[in-house]
Image (cartoon, rainbow, N blue to C red):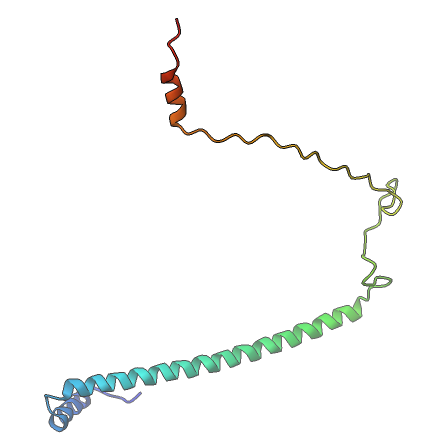
Amino acid sequence: MFDLDLEKIMAIILVAVVVIGPKDLPRALRAAGRWAGKARRVSNHFRAGVENMIREAELEEMEKKWREQNEAIMRANPAVGVGPAQPLAPPAPEGVPHAESVTPAPETPAPETQAPHTPAKSPVEPAQAAAASPPAP
């Protein structure tokens, strides 16, 4: 990018040591590093913003294309006699009554009996019960 080779870098370092001085050179390099980091962050943020704008533009183009294709398909294949209140049902096979003529069976409520709750036994209880019971004769 800047075409820096070893000779140019050495010349920059020599000028920096002479102009800034060896005592203040580390502080100057830290400041230069901070500036370079800020510049890198700003450029990354800008690049990400441009990439997001490009991605959004591509998505809008794809959505427009899909919308146009969907409209063309809907125009080519109109749904006859089907509206929002009439769901499309497949025809019933021969010998099977239509769904409209079949009456549903009355629903019977399920019995709501529950088994009595028994507390869980700890693993120690069976051992204590075996030790407490008298031995068999």
